[in-house]
Length: 312
Image (cartoon, rainbow, N blue to C red; front, side, top):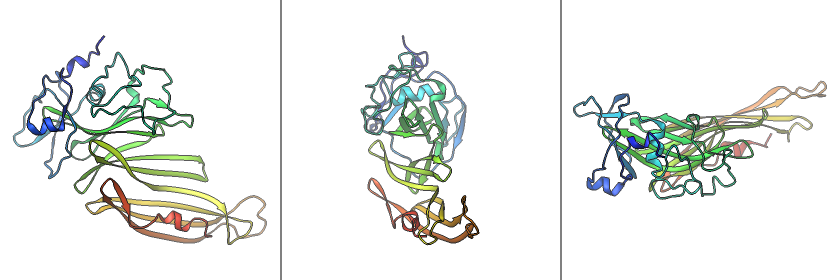
């Protein structure tokens, strides 16, 4: 049985970027109307690798693109052409670029708690908007022993009478991880922010930075946004040093600008006696740049964390 939403999509498979470049039209369209708003014109737009025709907006605006809002399941059916809501996700499913969705190292050892086929629930899909109407999609389909959830991710956009997929990848992380599209000069990038805290004195918030390359989302770098760690002090015997790091991040045409700051404290603990063990030792900050080099983000220097922790 076909999904009710499936019948709303064009019967043809998503076209390739080459077909789009040659002006080949997709057959059919989505028959529903969604809220629309006007998008400001920008100089550069990512190249789509998959596309699907949709019904044109009811309101036309001369010379301005109309960004559309599609149902989550519609996006899944465009991103994974063989997916239908009633049939669910199969473990051998491929995305619109021809890659297997679940057969990869990132999702290895992940399991579907409901078994296969996996029926997608509304809460399994996150959609966040970014510049120029681009949206980040994350489907949480498999679970891991440490509590992580994983599945396919994508950068997409629906404008006027066309729904486009710019890149597809996979992500594994905490349930509440936040995936957001950002602009980096002429690049459109996906940023995945997640917090991992085994305990309050060993806590880390990281940002994974994904570049669009050949229709895939490639993890190009990982940055510490917040981090705290307590270790035995090497300068104050019998006491502990606490390292607390914060990072200000800015996305510029030159690359990802990072301002890293670390506060080092000697911290109190039980049975400390009369020793002065609650004081700030020092503050350190450093700027570095992540610049795009082919399929990666190259750092102008190593992380401040690696150079400071364990020295006090």
